[in-house]
Length: 385
Image (cartoon, rainbow, N blue to C red; front, side, top):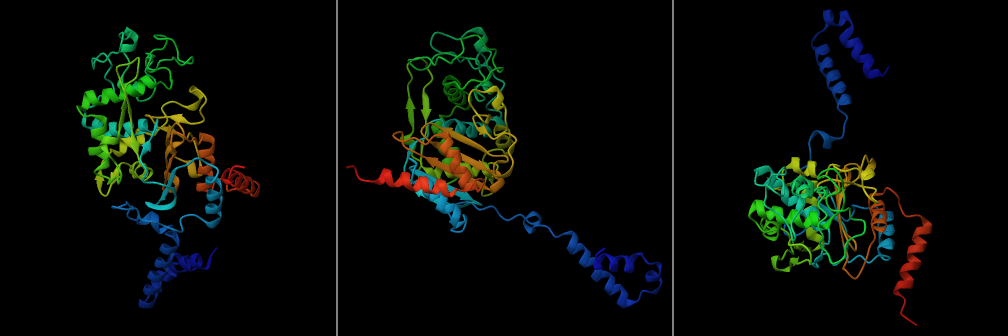
């Protein structure tokens, strides 16, 4: 038993102490109480008084000590082997690592789908978007019409890739695509371009707003996106569907702002831009990886989600696009990672996940890896003979 506990027992539990206490004993009693409370409340002060969350203003704040020198060395070495054009790592609201031209506007590929999910949130909360509305309810069809079973697909099925509508979009069909009418809506996950393009169209039909105007008005202006240009967004007409692809074109640092908005549960400088309930709901697993094709992550509302993860990936989720476009949110570390390439480059998912392991400290670079990356970088930078 500690001396403090013995003092407590002697002072408060002894009947004699109550009969013989005087002014000095009373003072001593309160001193012991204060000491005991101090021992009981020895917890991280950040749990008692939460620090004010940090948000960027016109520019980002920076923290040059956010990563250890060993981590920086490993990340620098690995980055020299990748086709990355822009990387921004944000922790506790401040930039701790930056690579490349983070101002450059370029194509987001499928990262646009996760941003569309974010746009849905306020309108679902207001009642303008009904997730239980069917395609038939909305009067939505497509070239050549939809099958009766396909008309039963709901908006919620579109944003979870479970519509069961396998209407053609591109010139060539994906051989993995199920036959039309073979799956009841809501029962089967398939990563289907038709779902995502129709989700754009359903958003516009129910809200009365163009997706790009909503992106500008609901996100770009309120959170101070530095490089957003409405005129740079790319709508692409597809050959076999009436619903175009609504490509988004953003900079790496504006992707990081969107990631921070999600990390902060949809709140930005005291304003609730996306309902916190929607952030949680949309980034929870709706389809486990066991029900999907070739994925180690689960799927939410257009977000990829780590399942039952511990450590730095607990509660983590990511937007993912072709060629190496990513917005990853890591709540356990209060971290956001935004990563970009051009269409001429390619950073595969496996390479990006290795980069995340380096940044989070889950798996530091080994001596063999450092030597290999340095060799690879020296070869790629060598002038042609």
